[in-house]
Length: 84
Image (cartoon, rainbow, N blue to C red; front, side, top):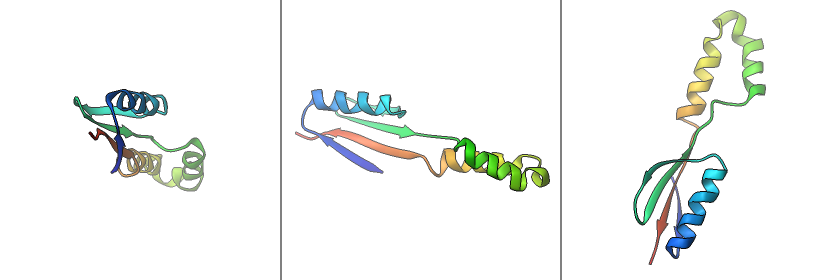
C-alpha cells in the first residue's frame, strides 16, 4: 500500500479530492488519515482477447475469472495521512 503524507488539513483534503477525481473510492476516512482504493474489472481489449481465445471453450467463465482477478488482486490502494 502506498502512503501519501500531507503537511496540513488543506493539502489532505486536496489530495483526497484529486484521487476521487481519478477514480479512487474512499474506504475509510478519519480526521487525519484516509484509505483510498481504485478497482477495475479489466479493459475491453483484454476481455475481447480472452473471449476470442477461451470464450467458446469456457462459455465466458474465463472472462469472469479475469474480471475477478482485476477487481481483487490488481486494485490500487493508498493511504493519505496528515503528518504534523
